[in-house]
Amino acid sequence: MIDHEKIEQAVRLLLEGMGEDVTREGLKDTPDRIARMYEEIYGGMDEDAGVHLAKTFTVDSSEMVIEKDITFYSTCEHHLLPFYGKAHIAYIPDGKVVGLSKLARTVEVFARRLQLQEQLTGQIADALMQYMCPKGAMVMVEAEHMCMTMRGIKKPGSQTVTIARRGVFETDPTLEERFFRMLGK
Image (cartoon, rainbow, N blue to C red; front, side):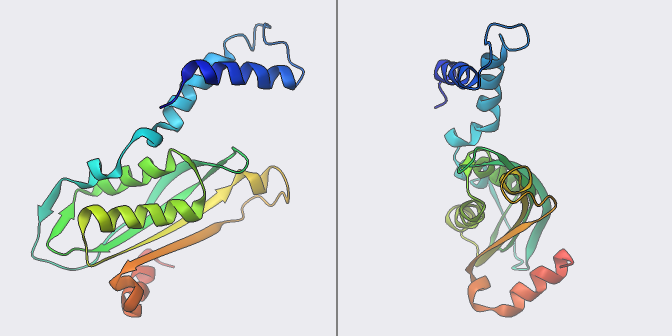
């Protein structure tokens, strides 16, 4: 649970530590603004992906379902800087599918936390397997990390790509090939 008051106190201390006057006009409301922003961008910390993946629909097909180019924004837990990009999800139904918006909501649940991209990718795949029980799932995440582009090595435009395979995607390379073909990769 996000503690609004503690965040305000921390932001005041941070600003003071930077040598700022926290009482000046431009900064006096900043601690409250930051606390409200954190409630929004870290709202996934209190969410359960199972809520979104619980409502399923029966299907006869077991053909691959792909939702691609799901835009997300997250925060690197190492530097507290944003990383953002696209998630691509595929699964092979085993009698059940979810509404397509539920896949994007699942990405949001995990992206709206302090995160590592590698962990984010696996969490999405694991949630699909746990709550939907498909024959398999595959998730690919492509992201740009501000901790690499605005500080440190300073290489804007570089992309980090992570992949998680579960179920039949781990054992059947033709499914993985079809996934990449359908993504246009």
